[in-house]
Image (cartoon, rainbow over all chains, first blue to last red; front, side, top):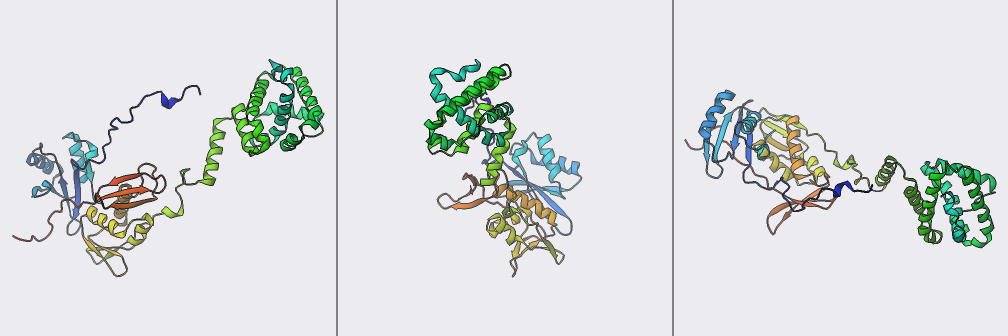
Amino acid sequence: MSTIQNFNSIVDPFADTGDTENEPTNYIHIRIQQRNGRKTLTTVQGVPQEFDLKRILKVLKKDFACNGNIVKDEELGDVIQLQGDQRVKVSEFLVSKLQLPKKNIKIHGF
Amino acid sequence: MSDLGFDPSLKKKKKSKKTEEASLSPETESAVGSGNELDDMLVGLKKKKKSKKPVEEFGESEKSKSPEADDLSASLGELSLKKKKKKAAKNKDATDFEQMLEKAGVEETIAAPKEFQSSEAVQASLGLPYDRLLNRFFTILKQNNPELAGDRSGPKFRIPPPVCQREGSKKTLFANVQDIASVLQRSPEHLIQFLFAELGTSGSIDGEKRLVLRGKFQPKQMESVLRRYIIEYVTCKTCKSMNTILKRESANRLHFLSCNACGSTRSVSSIKTGFQAQIGRRKRA
């Protein structure tokens, strides 16, 4: 009772808390689109420039046993397209192999 | 130590406090139930005294009762002498109690709500267990302000499960978009726009205000998308309440989420469709 626990640690109220939520610049979006039947398409948008997309695609295609290609979009830059639902696998790959922070990856779709 | 409360110089004042305490404590004791020793003391007192008068009465007719009060204090003194060892701590309590009463006593007899004052004093002096106080606090809070007590099971925020039917082989009918949007206090257009963006499809609203989506979707899939929508655009990040309003600030064209429960606002990113792959026939080839 004599000491109040919360006051023991002096915290700078203006310090950076680390969760900069409103930073829409470097998000990586992984989306899924339905095709005919039960076929789907996975798109990966916003992979940072410093990575060689061609090499990444080659590895992904081999790892996931699927086809894919790179689509050049005017606004959104290069986008990786993969056949089938590879969302979870792609995000795992991005985190483990490319050391990208997980909070920057957004998985969309159902 | 034991007769600290019976200082002759303070006699007059103390006595009045004593009797007050005596008449006060039985009320509070029932609610509190932790002053066993004090209770014992009171039992002893009761045997000797005929009856105790309420505090207000006492305040009015203080002079007439002073002899009685003398007796009381005397009897208390006797008791304390008899059970000296046991009552060392208790007497300390009592003196604390008196001090508290001394502070609060004057207003108490005049106007202040008695129960409130007395319970406060009892809490301060007896050191009630934390659990009990916490329970008490939450029961009171729940009675008066259920939303603050983390009670979010109100009927208002029960989201009906999405109802999906197949329309033909390639389309899905999402029947209760309107209901869900109204429960979430969002415009249906906003919700539908989000659904289109997340699912990467297009669609339309039919005559009965149901949503027709291109592609096949299970209710389970819709549910996960809805959950994401709620986290992103409905719940307040500060207090986790779903009682929020989405406003569009015309000055800077940003959407703001303002909470009705805690009053905080946060900006919300607009819905972006992002990259849409070309599916099916190409436009020009």
